[in-house]
Image 1 (tube, helix red, strand yellow):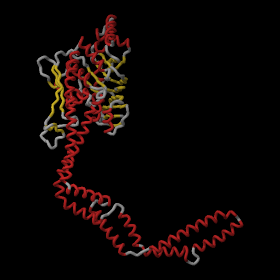
Image 2 (cartoon, one colour):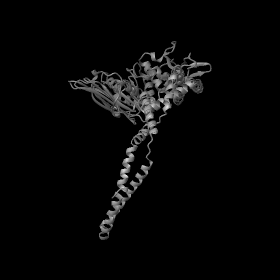
Image 3 (cartoon, helix red, strand yellow):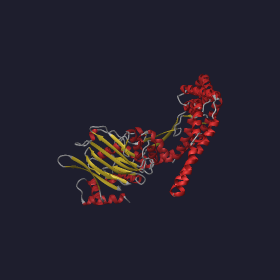
Image 4 (cartoon, helix red, strand yellow):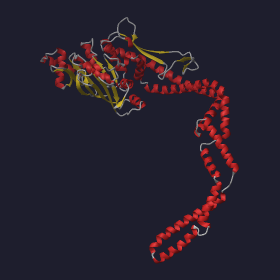
Length: 570
């Protein structure tokens, strides 16, 4: 739901901060007071075109900010996650229109594109009025609304997964078929590359290990000489370190017998002596294992040379060489087993297509079953709203496919074009005059009649999950009296499941308000300012009376207003 709207320096608006609640919010006011300006400003939040002319004179930029509560808007949250946007139960949208610099828009304080703003707006608001932000006048939304009405959203999601799976397998088949010629042409090259790599048969860490071994073998003579000299110094020579440790131990024992403070030093000497003994043992063992292996030395040098050549040819690293080996093995496997692999994929596709086709058929049948019920409900609602003799049709058509082998859906012997929503193309048709055939809803002219058609559709097919906020800008055009009363009642019922905001001139509609605002234009002799005031119960009676009788409000008019409000809320 819309929690608040803040408009600053927009046209006649200096600053407006509006707090909203659920239910039916009515906005009234004199013609020219600025009601449409508020709607225009709000449309900026929905991604409508912004012009610097709307910036209030004397200001650098206009700002429009809306705060929405979206805890139940799963589609919207999914969209935001797909766009790597922070997603909480609160959504803040801000639009800045500047007279000097580039216009900017933000979603949760992060810069956004107009395209994303429009996508978000489509999931938040349905605005019926002088703007194009009307989901029901976009044919592509009709199938979604029919599915909402029929409760088929989960079925559609299930079908979409089956369709995506079958499409993926078909793409694999097409890729395999298009690859066959390439594989045949490159088979000799792939075989040569694999033979060349396997002849060396390198492993991931082999080069490093060989270089370590090479370094040792190349320096075996030096290792032998220096280890021998070190051993002699530590253990085997005259006055070796081991011998000197023995002399030092005798002195320390003598000192310790006189002064116990030498005890710790004696322990440290013993520890050092142990370390020297361990080192001499290691040197003795190391010297005995040194070997001169000219054959192994040459073998290592040869293999390192071959590894170096492979690296130069296949990417510069051992990892790239091994990736090439794996890739070539896969290509050759496919080339050598093409027919078998193709047959396996075709069987997978047939199984996937059978399951997908069954789901598409069942989904289409459920839609067909729901169409008569929807058509009947729309006609009944239109009659209540004063449009007699209306005809409403929900037409479902399917398009046959001439690509049998590649068609995802095949029912019986017939193949169909398909999308993630199934095989059906859905469009609403309507006629409001006797003797006229129904025409596409998207081509119906605007006016009081189309406003009621929109209201009827929204009452029956727009769910709170799909569009939580409905805005009607002067839906009362061309209606009055009893019909206006019916329209107000319809919007009141709609507000039980949606947040509804309506701009009206008619008391019969205003009487149904849960919250009532009045727009006023104030002039101080220098410039005009548009203000918005939330009415209390007493002020609301006065405003409804003014709508009924004009500026001169009498006691009789007030009494009639009270009766109208009381009647509307019972």
